[in-house]
Image (cartoon, rainbow, N blue to C red):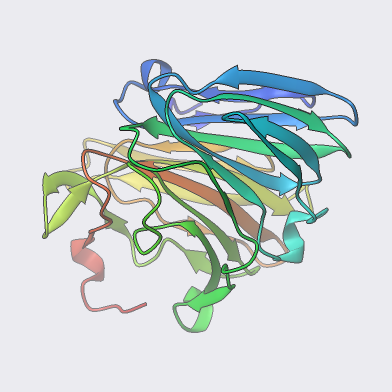
Length: 265
């Protein structure tokens, strides 16, 4: 199995834990919790900022000295409704208790203490189409460049209809040469409908030094340290993924793969 493909540890509790140390990079962290009603989790952000994304279900949060109440109302990620999320700066304690069965994603990157804690969405997040034809997918931007309340993190959700391509045309963001291109590490947390389905993700460099084609299943995470990284959803299988990106600057600039420079979308 590719070192870029991470299967979940199990079905309950912490099922993913991607850190800069075990990913072999410098910026992005991604942890996923699948909780039963009444389960509790807690921690501290340390020197990193964090965005909690309620992928599914409801949980009550206390964090950064505040009671944030119950977050979440999307019980099935494929409803495509905007998620409830919570931003915390570095140096914040946090605790959450599951009100229903829930899936909570914890997205982290280096923090600078430049922004206060805040709720993110669902108000102000609108499902937006991108691409055309069988390249069409639908985006919930949680914390992209236009949302200026993070130090490092870029976070978005993407819904790819069955039979469509996504993160396409193939592109890369693996050089620190702004404004031509930016260096951003990236994780993809994948979900499939039906859950027994599968999708394909390729990660490759122009010179072929990195050339991985992975079959992703419901709940998998793919690491993108460099290179182009398109996804394909076969007919009959709908694909969701949650992207987390971070690098030395909070800008998303990419270069399309040479073989796709004539394509748009």
